[in-house]
Length: 64
Image (cartoon, rainbow, N blue to C red; front, side, top):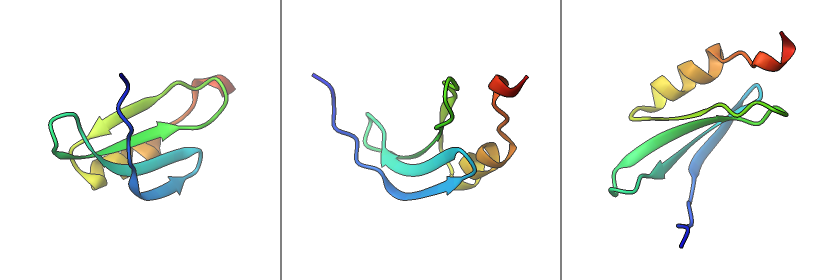
């Protein structure tokens, strides 16, 4: 059965959404996910600063 994810402190940096959540072990984690069409990029980070840096430097491969 899928687990319901609750995201808090969600921000948008360009096409990337950054949000905090609890991982499957109950620890705080931050996720960054691109919402552009046909871009499947997303990643989990242990710090908010790392996720925001990744969001700012992310470039979608679709435009190439």
